[in-house]
Amino acid sequence: ETGVTQSPTHLIKTRGQQVTLRCSSQSGHNTVSWYQQALGQGPQFIFQYYREEENGRGNFPPRFSGLQFPNYSSELNVNALELDDSALYLCASERGSNTGELFFGEGSRLTVL
Amino acid sequence: GESVGLHLPTLSVQEGDNSIINCAYSNSASDYFIWYKQESGKGPQFIIDIRSNMDKRQGQRVTVLLNKTVKHLSLQIAATQPGDSAVYFCADKSGNTPLVFGKGTRLSVIA
Image 1 (cartoon, rainbow over the protein chains, first blue to last red):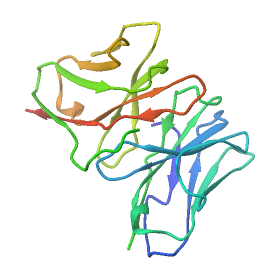
Image 2 (image 1 turned 60 degrees about the vertical axis):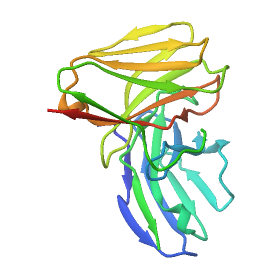
Image 3 (image 1 turned 45 degrees about the vertical axis):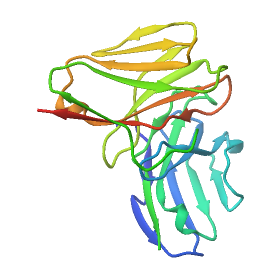
Image 4 (image 1 turned 180 degrees about the vertical axis):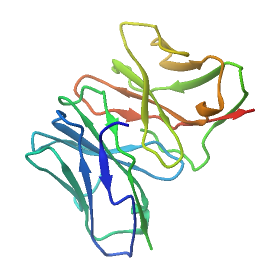
């Protein structure tokens, strides 16, 4: 086990709705990255938070936003959901920024109908 | 990463044989490489990493080879077991940038 926990594990939303996904990082890890993994593809980088500040963002629109809290847990928020947002959302923590040594959670599987 | 289709490359091997999974990366500035294993319904799990100043690194039953000249990475699994069945991803990064994941290869072990 990686010590990274995500919730919820599965959820179903409809187009236009908003969703919040949560992640608790491994103890001692101050950096959290979020990835989107569509079916049959590799994870795609959404953004990273380091010490509560956004520290890099991939090619995702502004309706994807996030937060990191003082205890280093994190949230991913997606507004105005679209069908193509259906995917597995993965949270990964690491000690330090962009070390590459990511520890992934099991993911939150989002289905948008 | 590059855009990919829905069908993952697949490798089928007999239990006990060696497996070789290949990966091409595009960024010549990449200096750190990782192989991840992802089982069904789970998040990616770290297997082994290698830095650009090395061309080979060995772990328990696994070996990673790096050829920077042709931007190619491979993962060798010795004596493949049913528990090795999963999707394997290579990932690379350059300096202080996030990890970029490759397409993935599905390894199926035939008992």
